[in-house]
Amino acid sequence: MSVLPITLYGDKILKKKAKPINKVDNTVIRLIQNMFDTMDNADGIGLAANQVGSDKAVFILDLSHIKDFEKTKPLVIINPKIVNRSEELSVMEEGCLSIPQVRADVERPSSIKIVFQDIQLKEHEMETDGLMARVMQHEFDHLCGIYFVERLSEMKQKELKEILKKIKNRALKFEYPITEKDLSQ
Ligand code: ZN
Image 1 (cartoon, rainbow, N blue to C red):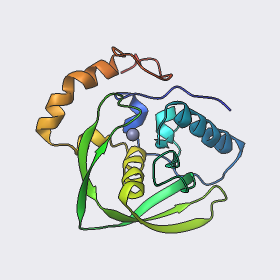
Image 2 (cartoon, protein in one colour; image 1 turned 60 degrees about the vertical axis):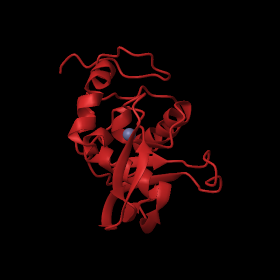
Image 3 (cartoon, rainbow, N blue to C red; image 1 turned 90 degrees about the vertical axis):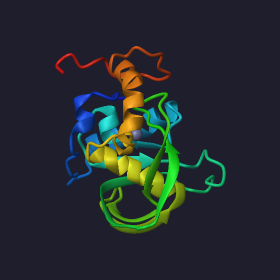
């Protein structure tokens, strides 16, 4: 297993919609193992496949290092669909391994119902709220090509313009391996 470089804000694959997984072969298993290694190495709690350069519809999460979530098992979420979102909204601070050093309050539905498949492609339905619902919505957005900063007010997005440009140009110090700047863009 290995730690992969993480794609950064501006990398094309982060704006692409993920493709469904129809078969869990060795390539998919290796991808998921490497995603866990990459996320752990960067102290993340969630990671989507396009954050390691894959277009597959899978994200992982592991909240077990967070207080009060020690017993929460890591999850592999394949081909997710959010089938219900609560009308009630809540605000929580978010960050993203693809947008290092940026943290901001984001408003999202407080609870969701998500349908997904596990590593055996067995289907599950889960209703969740709090931090779990938050991370799932953030990662689900990644699979749809959406950054969390796109959910901020226009004013806030303007404030972030400079730092986002720095991230794109790799003009910051990064604490984990990142992709090279994509010169084709
Ligand atoms: Zn993210």
